[in-house]
Image (tube, rainbow, N blue to C red):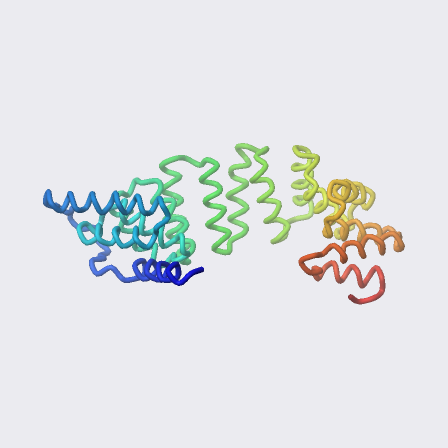
Length: 297
């Protein structure tokens, strides 16, 4: 990154983070611009938009600030400024811009959605859900609504509500694979009843029998919950055949073999798992290695 690029980023951050002197909580009266100021505003705006589309963000932000001097409540200018701030993960700086845009255009779906995620990123869980409610009232509870609620709940540390958001949509479309996989990930990460886990694995594999990651995870779940080890071995072997150099798949297969008394064969596979762990050996693989071989790494 050259010095000029660094200066542009610093200028952009400064433009986005500087407090806006005219910011007010209440919606102000509509701005009446003279014909001359209207022409200036249009020139600044279209040139800023062109620069934005060409990824000249610092220059675009400067011209958008000129637009705000003429009309600080313009919804599109504030949306662009919020988008620029969010692109650099400056959620706290993006929020006032989005809020001004929302006050000026409260039915704008894009702003409602941006506010939902920005409130989430700034820790305002209640307001984030209010934006979700407004969007649902506008568009109904569709796939996008479910995913938005899932994201908000998960980022705010509410996995049960996140799972419910997915399941509400799966009740309408029980075969939608992205949601089935997202729900399974939640269940694996945060825990669920054994019968629910088994049903979730079976449901996905009934729709996609060649999902080798789910096969591996299902096999490991059976192995660690006193399930059917023969079924676990079949599932694990199938995933390993599809990706024989995957250290996680090798580890699962080695552990299942060990649980069935095949210590010599398990040793062979767990050593391969360690050798192929290019990003470092996971702690669980280390534990299995020690148990199977009787030695530490």
